[in-house]
Length: 257
Image (cartoon, rainbow, N blue to C red):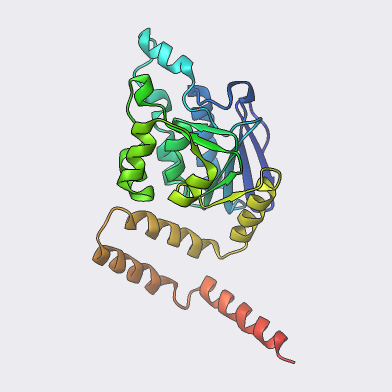
């Protein structure tokens, strides 16, 4: 795929890199960027050559949250509430393949509340995470009153949201907001390596695991077990399973002197 006005798109094997491309605005989310990213995610979901998607930001920041022009347009009655950017999280959450965020510099507002909708989040040393909603007379969005409390715990979510102070990368990792922190100069290389490793795995099994984990967030233990058993019954002895087992056995035979 090619570069667009608000989003740069490139493929590396089975990995698609989506780069938020408003560096002069620190990749703030405008209605145009939200629409382009949503459309590209849907196209990527349907592209069988792509196994994994990575989203990061151009320039010195990941994402500065909602473009301030959105608030001004709403105040002038030119836009109906947050709906122009409010569906982006649904496209992220519906994406059926592994979806990775690579955050550096500043992640602010929506740049933070979108993160729980990714499957994995990696950060560069020096990254910071700020949710200034209460300072702006607002509340959190994108379902983060649900997702953040379950991801990092209710009390930490309260500190992040109500405290409205930047969270450094090391604390974000300790809290569980991000998976791991890498040196800034190495982050994208390390993330590409992780994504490439995922792209080599059986795609059906990967997608099924992602779906089960998502469903498990919102259900009981018994519901989760029932869904796992149902999916496993269709995968045991299936083509992906047999190919993987045969490849494993062959690798063991080759290691035997």
